[in-house]
Length: 103
Image 1 (spheres, rainbow, N blue to C red):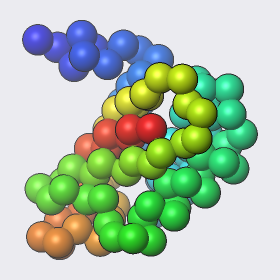
Image 2 (image 1 turned 45 degrees about the horizontal axis):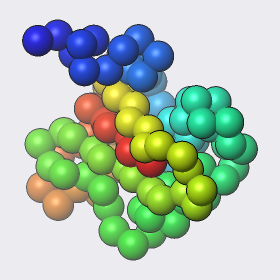
Image 3 (image 1 turned 120 degrees about the horizontal axis):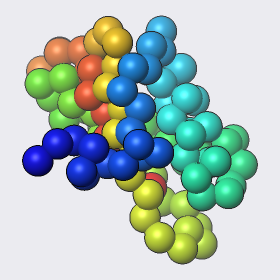
Image 4 (image 1 turned 90 degrees about the vertical axis):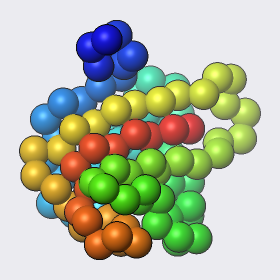
């Protein structure tokens, strides 16, 4: 099964190049906001608030930023493959280069 079977083109970003975690969250929030018709700021604030509770890095280079948005009709999942790994405060210390965003 190909990754495009699980995440259609509009749900996957296969060459993202953020400088750091903050920029990654902003870029993902922008993509998600367009898909759900909500302000980017609202999505980014929800993701940032969740990250303040603890890193959503799973380890081994995988990140799972997620947040709840009041009134969201259906869940949204996006996949991002980073051009180069970034620090994500993972417990194992590994930088992240594969990210699944869930709202």
